Each structure stands twice: as structure tokens, then as C-alpha cells.
Amino acid sequence: MTVVTRRVDERRHRAADSPRGTTARVARRAQVSPAAYAFLTIVLLASAFPLWWSFVIGSKDAAALNTGEVSLLPGGNFLENASTVVSTLPFWKALGNSIIVSTVVSGLVVLLSTLAGFAFAKLRFRGREGLLLFVIATMCVPTQLGVVPLFIVMAKLGWIGGLWAVILPALVNAFGVFWMTQYLRESLPDELVEAARVDGASTLRIFWNVALPAARPGAAMLGLFTFIATWTNFFWPFIVLEPGNPTLPVALQQLQAAYYVDYSLVLAGVVLAAIPLLIVFVFAGRQLVSGIMQGAVKG
Image 1 (spheres, helix red, strand yellow):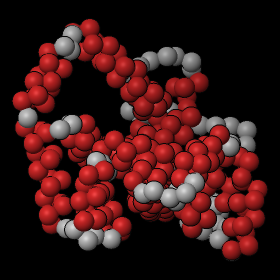
Image 2: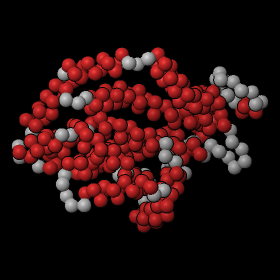
Image 3: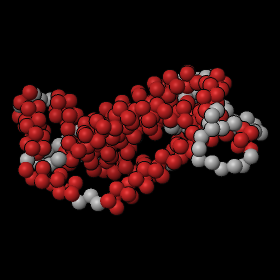
Image 4: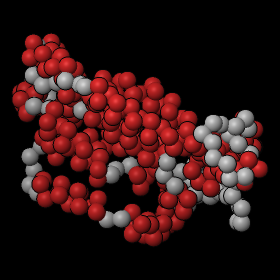
């Protein structure tokens, strides 16, 4: 398998160092106009504004909000509001639960979706296209339709109130399978798979040593999207988890009283819940973009 792995690396290095690839990259950079940068700046500011507005509201007190004055400048009560949120809620337990659920779900979704994508993209078996079409068709079914039977199954297994009831139903999703299938069809040449078979590699060995390295950029995208979606998921955890064992979105819901909502506390909690996502993006964003650019290079 070292021969096959070496071939994959050599192919990528030749593609990256080829004059055609270098010329294309230079041409693309030269075509970027100031108007494009201005448009992207506007999009960036518009995307960041909701988080900034949440921070502004979360840094004020209830009396300042009741005056109805609109200001884009933050107040001086954010640390106090954040301390109230942490002391009022089971914040650290909810944070730990969110980290566990999001990490396990995103990791297993990437692994299982890549396995299924490799099978649909590179293996030949009867009913392959029909089965893939069925998997894609399940994306049209609303999640709410499966809540009652799924809750009954979790209750019979005795998992209501535990994290497994949130983790297991989310381990595979149709979008992940479709994403990895399309990515491996384009990024993994059939010649490499056939060369690995000639070298005597089994199907699982081909997946681990050939398909998985080729799928790394697409898997990184899928992992990041899945982590964010799982971290912010409220609907199913709210139904299946107990109030004393929540994830962060479910815990933040406890800040709302029956007849009164202190939006400064709620949005301070929202900002606290968004900080881990920002940290993940800061650390993973550069590697993610680098992997996408490497995967986009064609030989």
C-alpha cells in the first residue's frame, strides 16, 4: 500500500506544481476586482451583525432595554450578565454535554458518510443508483414526522434523558452521504482504486489508505457543518433530554420565565454559547480552506 499512497502524493504534488495550475491561480487572483472585495466586506459585516447585536443587548441591563433606546454600542454589564447565566443554569454541565454530543456526532457522521460515499462512488453493486436515490429522497421528509416513533424507540431502549438518545439518531444523515459520494466521484480517480486492487489491497484497506486521504477536504467541510448543526440543535434535545442534563441550547431556554423574558440574560447566554463555535472556526478555518484548495487542484 505504500506504493499506492506514494502515487497519490506524487499526483497531488505534480498537480500543485504544474505550470498550468500556477498560471490558473495567478489568473484567478488577478481577476479579483475592488468591487468584489467591497461586496465580500458587506457580506462579512452583515453576517457578523447578529452576533454583535446579541453582544450589545447582552451587555445592557433590563432597565436600559425598557427605555427603548437603540444603540449599536455595548453597555458595561456583559460580565455581570454572563456570571448570572453561569450561576443560574447548569451551564458547565450543558457545555460539556454539547462538546461531547457535537464531537462524537460530527466524527462518526464523517466516518460513516465517507464509508457510504466510497461505496456509492467507487464500488459496483446491483441497485446502487436506486439506493442512492432513495437516500437522497429521505432529505425531503421533515424531521418532525419521525419524532413520535423515534421517541418510542428511545423510551423502549431506556435512553430517555441520556446523551445516547441525542447521539445515535444523528450518526448518519442523507446529506452527508450525498456530499461524500459526489466528492469522491470527482476527487478519487478510478485508476488509483484499480491500482490498489492490483497491489492486493482489500476494500477496507483501499478505503483507509486511498479514499480517506483523498476525501479529507470534503470530510473537513462535512465535519465542520455537522458540528455547527449539532451544537445549535434545539428541537430533538429539548424533547428527549431532562432539564438537569441539557445541552447548551436547551439550557438557555430555561432563562425564559412564564410571563417575562430578560433579553439581556438570554442574549448574553447566546454569546457565551457562540464562543466555542468561534474558537473551532478560528483553529479549523485555515486548515479547512487549505484542504479545499488542495482538493480543488486538478492534474
